[in-house]
Image (cartoon, rainbow, N blue to C red; front, side):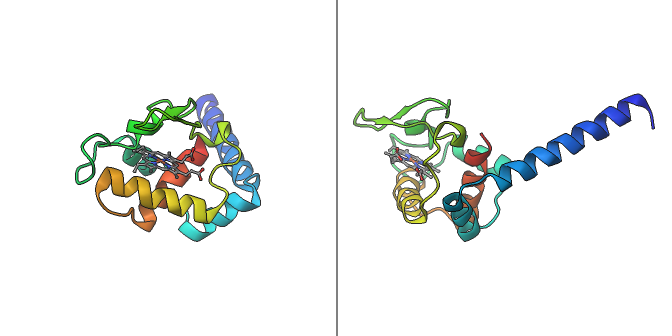
Length: 132
Ligand code: HEC
């Protein structure tokens, strides 16, 4: 094994350990949300969250219209009311109550896409937001 492949193997082991630790440290509420929606794909969730969609309201073509593109910062409703950051690392209480998560997905997806999000779209978004 060359030095660089040893370094890569060590980095991979660390990344895997970090992923396992992150999953293990999810609060019981968050574990229940993830269990209900299923494991998602964080990269797909990020792409979905930042994409411009059609079918919804003209002034909210993307999730970022209210949540902004820096999810570690506060967002704003169309009426100008502050929305707490979406990044799980900045929002310990988020994504821990399934009814709340489902209620806002229903409302926000209807605004942005003109339809409800699918279960896998929701799982992907939650996987992404829990990763940041
Ligand atoms: C019209 C403004 C607006 C748009 C557009 C919007 N949201 Fe939201 N979102 C809100 C508000 C307001 C809340 C509830 C207040 C809060 O949780 O701080 C919320 C809450 C949420 C929650 C609940 C989080 C929790 O605390 O459990 C999720 C998940 C969510 N939004 C995802 C999305 C996704 C995905 C999109 C794009 C499809 C989106 N939002 C687009 C305004 C918006």
